[in-house]
Amino acid sequence: MEIEAVEKAYPKTYVVFEDGEPVKKVSCSIVPLATLSTASSVAQIEGLERIGGIKYAVRLLARQGLHSVQLKAKLGVHHVGERVQQEVCDYCIQQGWIDDQEWVESRIRQWQRQGKSSREIRFRLQRLGIEGEVETDDRETLFTFVERKYPQLLQADCVKKERDKIIRSLLRRGFSFSLINDLLHNK
Image (cartoon, rainbow, N blue to C red):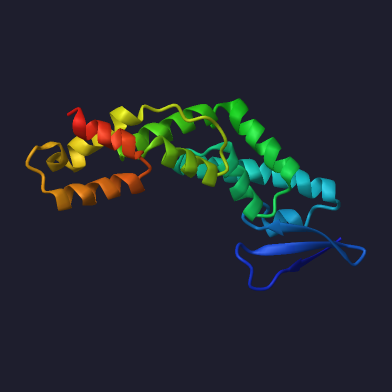
């Protein structure tokens, strides 16, 4: 088994060759070179990846909460195989370090405080690769956001030009026109 560095790669990556054929890419962020050089088979490298992946996950989770999909993506950047990614995620969930449902609920609350509509929240979650149904009250979110950010919209003497500008801004945030219209007429 031979190990060769891949030039100009970040993170520092090595390719493992067996009988002159490339078998696996390994990141030094997951498996240090000194440890990698002691491995004699691909199965041993996967075992080292599993251990290194858990250590890497702990370092990441110590800084910020992650969804299991995000953790898998971060491990994938380091050339960790899908099976090992799943094993690392399962271990982290078993230990209670990752709670996907709580992470999603927390992000939904955070984005609602920022005045994001359920449509935009759904889009953001899909962009992260997280599927699921978003149950939010857009009416309450819109009212709270307008009270905080655009209180002049709720006043009777709001200039039409400014009102139209605010309405366009709310439409871009994903709120429906009918919901905005209800807010304006049922202050």
